[in-house]
Length: 122
Ligand SMILES: [Zn+2]
Image (cartoon, rainbow, N blue to C red; front, side):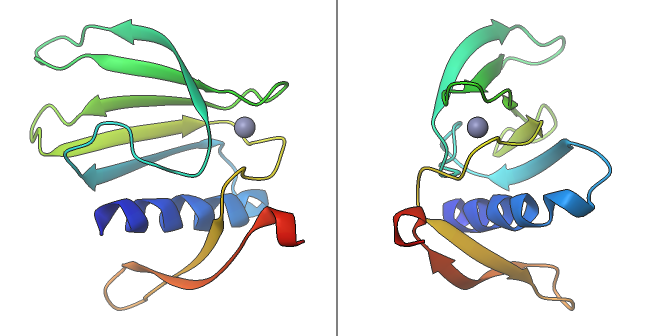
């Protein structure tokens, strides 16, 4: 499902986080649900009206104490079938849910599940 692709993509990027030079990353996902399950727990702290768009922009903060990661969620204003999720920062803790390790297929660019583990089993 799209939700699973989204989650594995997020996990893959978290995994290669050290190699990144920016802590900002955005995903564009086709979905009916505005808030996609990425394995983390979030607390909504803001909502803003977007110019030229019927859909608002919602702001979330990671609910783990001491973690400063934020995400911004809004529908694509050019194609409302898509949800744009932008993350800012790096989590200071492990994912509270099961972590899927994704690999990217070079030809198609799609992510697929290469493995998984649960933090409790470490
Ligand atoms: Zn966090």
